[in-house]
Amino acid sequence: MLQNKQQEIAFFDSLAREQEYNVFTDAANQKIVDTVIKLSMPEKNALIADLGCGSGIFTQHLHERGYYCLGLDLSHQLLQLGRKQSQGINFLQADVEFLPFQDNSVDIVMLSCLVHHLPDPTLCAKEVFRVLKPGGRFVAFDPNRLNPFMYLYRDRSSPFYSSKGVTPNERPVLPAKIRNIFTQAGLAVDSAYVEGLSFRYVASDTAKGILPLYNFFDRIFFKPFWMKTLRAFVFTYGMKPYSS
Image (cartoon, rainbow, N blue to C red; front, side, top):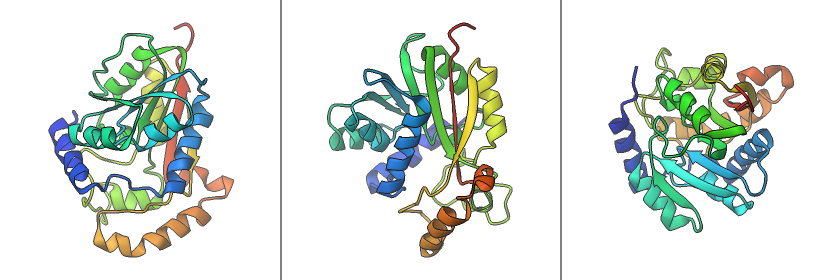
């Protein structure tokens, strides 16, 4: 199944007009960036390509920490918003399945809550492998279908599924499935699970009312180590081998 890219562009262009793309709290944004840096271990002169960068929230955080970043997204209007809000960052309109980079040219690839927008991430994984330098690393973070809240609220098979605020392409990921796809592309892959990524905004008026309760429950209930695979977000990460 192919991604309907026009649906994605129309949806995120509308978010740019509403300027409601920053769904996480500032603390959650920082925690995401901290996790990306921990898992990818970039050197200070590393080139980081932020795929699905939107308006550049995470790109800007990485830039402020001294990394050279490029932001790529399908949505022209989100990129325009990013250019207005961020200084010293190059933003490119591009498709993750057809990246505008030469082979073996990028140090770090970051997939910013992007993979779950792809009904089949195979082409994306192959492109990540192609553009990474040998020894280069990638980190993707996405909602985890094994998390009960993500499943009940955001998975199409759930009786409580809400399509409010998402595109028809979106579905929380199964960590093992995503690991397998990136492994088959030639990458060495693992998963990490993160709790406590609090939301500041959801599109549903009903969900807004219980958002503080969800944020509290997510931060406390899923903190124990034995609950890690059920945490709301999974980070899929790995490295391109030096020889393949």
